[in-house]
Length: 285
Ligand SMILES: NC(=O)c1ccc[n+]([C@@H]2O[C@H](COP(=O)([O-])OP(=O)(O)OC[C@H]3O[C@@H](n4cnc5c(N)ncnc54)[C@H](OP(=O)(O)O)[C@@H]3O)[C@@H](O)[C@H]2O)c1
Image 1 (tube, rainbow, N blue to C red):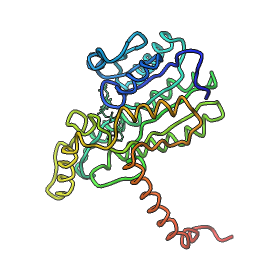
Image 2: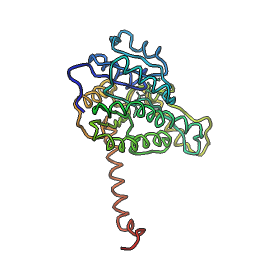
Image 3: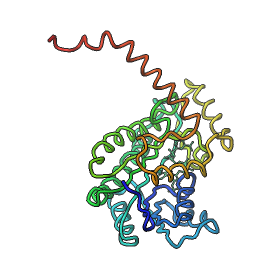
Image 4: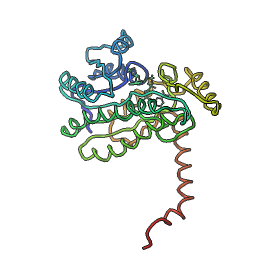
């Protein structure tokens, strides 16, 4: 994609009333770009932006990302207001901490509705535009937990691993149309993510997983001391899109890089150990 330099770019960003999404909106408006910002509460978004940004180029959109019709309508409103679309940022997401057996079917559906079905709704509504204009950039905000999984985070990881899988395929599908895809993999960032406003918990727990209860308590205490600065993170995400042409994955945070590296090493060791036996299931030549 060649990022527009002769006019303001138009961005469609999901999950914008807090955290990284809010910071993206502030910085994009500061650049003079057009921003369609989806949120469950435009009131919360506008209150957060008050005095922090010139909202002339903002289109606040109250959207339930799980509702395909509502998402398509929001994308139509965006192109009607700004005359086109250049960048889509699938940012909305939330954490969930529980053991696998404590996670209800409802918990699973809720998470995947937001992190997978919601993203797919946005992609279905926006990709035809980007493909036909033969330019555009899709940014899918995953996590280092889209690459590696740890006890207590199974549901969140299931959502982010799914997002990584769809994003890898998407990147290869649309490259020929001049559309870029970036998967963003933050480590711990000092947003609202680890507050009880954002972090969901199961309805019921068992006594069998004291380490997960302890981990949950420790994570709630982490709030305010996370390594990642959302202002820097958002700036790096914008810089990456403006520059274009970078690698598929944008790792944000030294913690994220360390966890991802450990995962790659463990995966390589597993593959090395399997090298002799993998071919045993092949039909003989
Ligand atoms: N902070 C971290 O440590 C961290 C690490 C790795 C990845 N991430 C990812 O980064 C992205 C942004 O998170 P953040 O750190 O900025 O957290 P945040 O401060 O909690 O903000 C999350 C945003 O996602 C939206 N959201 C939350 N739950 C939602 C739901 N059930 N349905 C629809 N939208 C929902 C919210 O949008 P509205 O309230 O405006 O609707 C909110 O603005 C997420 O995808 C998250 O998984 C964060």
